[in-house]
Image 1 (spheres, helix red, strand yellow):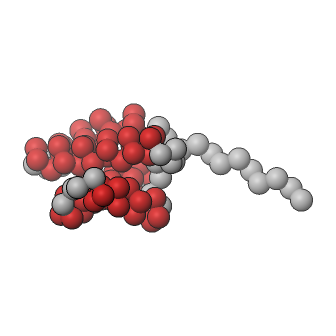
Image 2 (tube, helix red, strand yellow):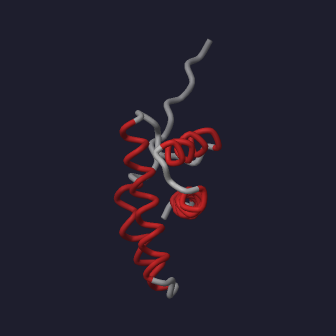
Length: 97
């Protein structure tokens, strides 16, 4: 039986964060939105690294991260904002920017 081809590594998401935040500023997003989204992505990337997870958008992975936010005492509204920021960022990263 042939071995599956190795996965092609995706972009280094940590390197894309600053570029993405610049794009958000160019879109005239508010300073609070940019900070919240940036904090969200950095939190997700730290969580992925700490839990040996690939930083890709996967329903279960995102649910585990949100669960960890809630377990750490974050409000549901905070977890929702964090999730939205990460989803938006990962959609941009998936487009290969």
